[in-house]
Image (cartoon, rainbow, N blue to C red; front, side, top):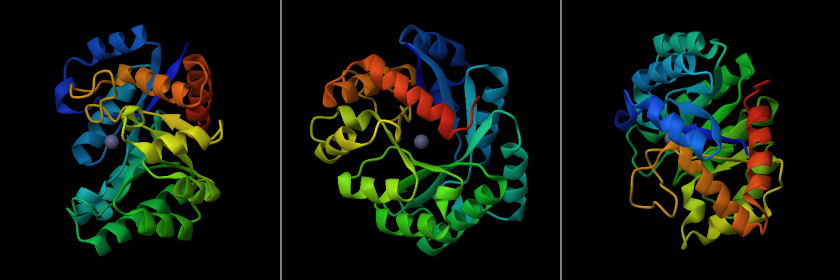
Length: 256
Ligand SMILES: [Zn+2]
């Protein structure tokens, strides 16, 4: 079995200097590829470094809503340089976060739209973070014709109505450990109805640890348990979920 973790933070503090240990543990669980997501200049740089050091790692770089207020021409030039590296596969995580509100909302929307324009011009897919902001996220993505360059809603936690709206834009969604939580009924409903060729799986480690390790620190190998939770919901095997999501991730990120 081959599993792809479409969004993880192996560039984050808990994993530093121990990347090989976590990648070995992942391999034992069938997790053979991971995309390391950046969010600010430091994490972007570390994501790119990891993608150059390890065959089975890919990088995602972008300015998340928290640091949208710092985004300027210099940031964009740096992103372009990083996006042109052969193993950088998407622009992200970018989007809107009206829960933390670390940048003013108008600035978040402006910088989000600017980065979507950049993705459009470079023909790169985008990896989207959205929290308490589905309505505006949807509108900005729609206005930017995201279907023409491709996008993934990371850690999708919406109900089937929101799922349909994002799929209709030509996007995909990625499920995290939340899908294994007993009370996440909206996510369960979405994971049951999403077409086989439109979803990915991820850990978002060190956050969102799936059952049976909920409460402990998450790690990229645990995407295996996300696959198992979805298999249960769809009344199928973990191999089937692994196979489809692996192919979908390769296609979404343009990996040969
Ligand atoms: Zn993340």
